[in-house]
Length: 104
Image 1 (cartoon, rainbow, N blue to C red):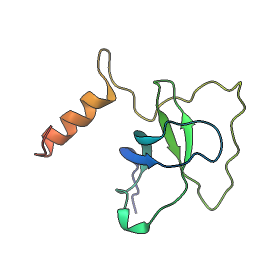
Image 2 (image 1 turned 180 degrees about the horizontal axis):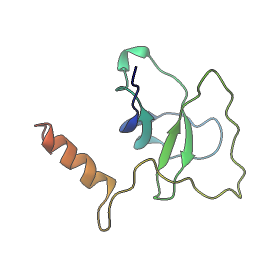
Image 3 (image 1 turned 180 degrees about the vertical axis):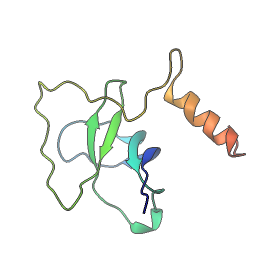
């Protein structure tokens, strides 16, 4: 059996922040998963960790472990995927859509 995981771009519509701060409205977050996100699973709470490129990584709880809130003095996490020099995550998303025959 082989299980692989890779980074995904996931658009979240943030309605309310329970702890910490995050922008309200739609934001693109980074996640590492072994399959695409199924929208039919309903609404859920997401744990986010600020990353060093100005966005957020989505943290996944495995085996129902409780995640602990980061201390204010902790540095931002490394992003799950980092664009190359002079490129942005938006560049990467646009190129991915184009490669899959979707509109830019």
